[in-house]
Amino acid sequence: MSRNHIITNTFNHLVNKHTIKHYLGYFDYGVIKTILNELKTALDAQTHSVLMKKRCYHVIGEGLENIVRHGYDNTFNQAFFILNMHDSGFEIIIGNLIDSTDKQIFENNVAEFKGKTLDEIKHGYSEKLSTTDISQKGGAGLGLYDIAIKSNNQFSVEFEQNDEFTHFCKMTIIIS
Image 1 (cartoon, rainbow, N blue to C red):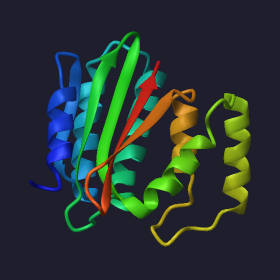
Image 2 (image 1 turned 90 degrees about the horizontal axis):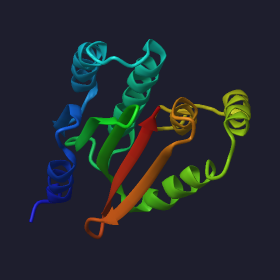
Image 3 (image 1 turned 180 degrees about the vertical axis):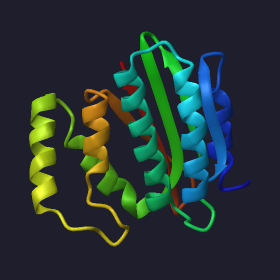
Image 4 (image 1 turned 120 degrees about the vertical axis):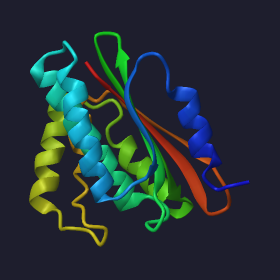
């Protein structure tokens, strides 16, 4: 069975009548640019506030960039993103494979946000911004802070073991 079957099956299960925009396939920065250009048009057609649409756009951009930076196989980053209508806002779902050795690190990073207020997260962002260097993967560790701030800390991450080398990581973010 293909390493990517978990991605395809999950994607097919999550796309529904509330889906505004979706993509399943290879990710690189060219694909991200195309998706974000198309996303502007899709969001412009929505009746939500300009601020909500900008927060949604920013979070999707951050999530897609994370796929390229932190995905399991940088030569074939098959992954997905789905933008759904959700109550009075948006639901963003991003799924990709990560190296099993990175799972615990990511879980620990996500755990930092549990139970924190938006002010505490913003303070942590400021501290991290002033004390962090750029990592080998090209990030400063601020992406989750951006997502937490723009979503009012309404995000969750789930992991499922895919094989001995990879875990499927699914992040769900609510923008309301």
